[in-house]
Image 1 (cartoon, one colour):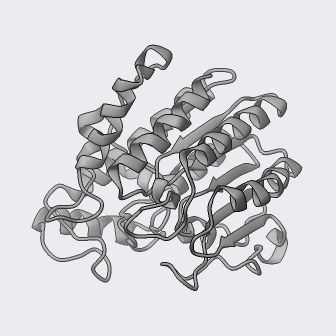
Image 2: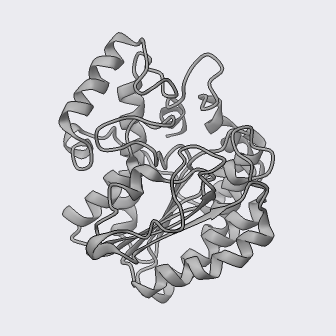
Image 3: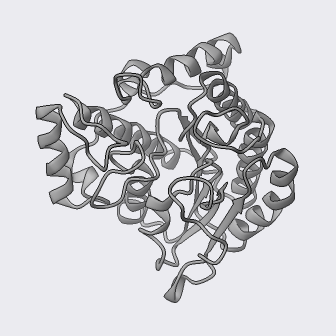
Length: 306
């Protein structure tokens, strides 16, 4: 499983390199977490899977780019390479398999480290994200499992714009997104005023934090985020737990510690249990300091496995 997930990464010193998975795996082994979890294998996502969220013309563009292996899939942040289609479809396949595993068992949780690619839109790549596995999972839960209400919680430093704008007018997708303010960080979106629109107004909660905000600010706003999610009684919870919100990340300016990630995972698992289904899927998201992502993600796993 690890080798296949590790293929999703970009060459030539790109911040999102293929070594990110290895950094997590070493800390996972050091903490002996393997004895507390089940490791899953997974298939590559099919074209049918990808088309749950993405437009066919875009998927075909990625296929062509993957064969050529040159250029960029967006304005330049997300380069193409030979096999990028298979690598990106592998991430989606991992998230879908984790979701299926959760749905087949009562009160189960799962974590996928190289996943949570929340910037990709239905018709384009963005911000290191080729296919939006979060969106594919949401669509699969609705169309294949007939769930009506799904919560998406995001504590990555960057606003999850690919998820937010895909579901901005959809009242069945509840969003609570904590991130560094768009005034100081890509993608420049996620203002407090963005609360959904039309029938979905009020189902979305964006919580932008100023550069330099840390655990104290997280502790202040997190209860309101949790209450927002609980109010809608979602049937499945997704946590995008990007580690770039930790202090020292080279691409962001927040100062959280792994304790915030552990609390988010622990509280969402408790909420899922209170709602009677126990379903929580955590996705690794961003994080470009390898030590940070290793510590944050293993704290999430430990909290979910407790």
